Length: 283
Ligand SMILES: [Zn+2]
Image (cartoon, rainbow, N blue to C red; front, side, top):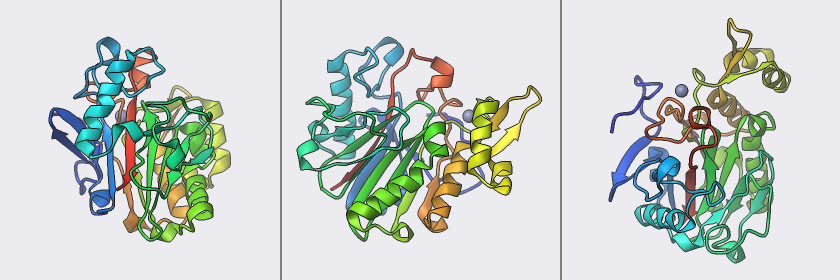
């Protein structure tokens, strides 16, 4: 499978794999943790048709629900997770985080969600796959091997400027006693700094949320008056400032917009697309 990477010259922080026709990404750093399963989906290996082809994980974009369920069965089979116990976020670009417990198992897949406006999920209970959705926005994975707790968040530009990564770590600290120093954190496939053009208003919000020095790392002004925004770098800065150790941080070099044959990208496809999903579970 050919695809574009932004950084060919360093150790790969994320690796594309294939099993039973399902293509998915994994972080080698998280593969070392034996008590978790994780993955990030691609478009390849599912049964959805047309603009959703082929591995869409959203039930709310108009795809056939039975096809979406089959997609869950397939990837969960490959990742060794019980598909019918997945718990889905309800993403609206908030920084709200939900603590997931046994009674939530299956919500969003086999039963209705009884919550809304949830962009982050955390848990310390086992055999409950957490699932969040993407098509250019940034997936954040958190694993605390000391307190046996996990977190999974959706951080678009709004979530990033509101420091979703830090908020997820604080929620894990509050609920499970997690210390950021112990946490393995990963930034998953999303839009790269060459592809993400934003206007003055978005740039201004980032300028206010970061120092002058950080701003020069995150924003680059273009000749057309727009800006290129680096969400990978912004999330890295936020996580390091929140006390995640540099050796515990893995940042993707795979861009959704650069790889539309492999990944859904909102900037490429608009609303005519499926959703990618991040999966994380304590075994
Ligand atoms: Zn790109």
